[in-house]
Length: 105
Image (cartoon, rainbow, N blue to C red):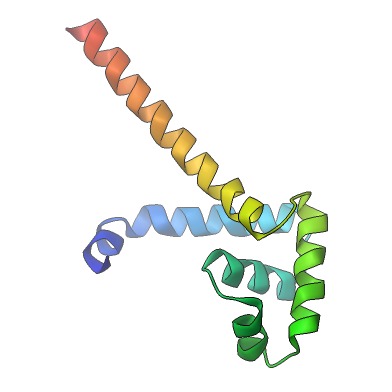
């Protein structure tokens, strides 16, 4: 994983920025941005509460606020929102390569 991350450093940084930009478009607070980022990384609500030195109930309320502001139904949909775009972009690039090879062939 470490060599892949090193090779993709620029793309990962751009993706991170794009995700933060979307969080801001959703008008998430700084705390909600932090929580949403941790949720995308796979942290449980309990782990997030411990990391932020707050109660799990507070994190649960903030997560609900994230879902409400984003119009998404939960953690899975939050992750899928960003992952779907990545796979669509990869599929589009593969389609273009295939089309070019057919045209050029």
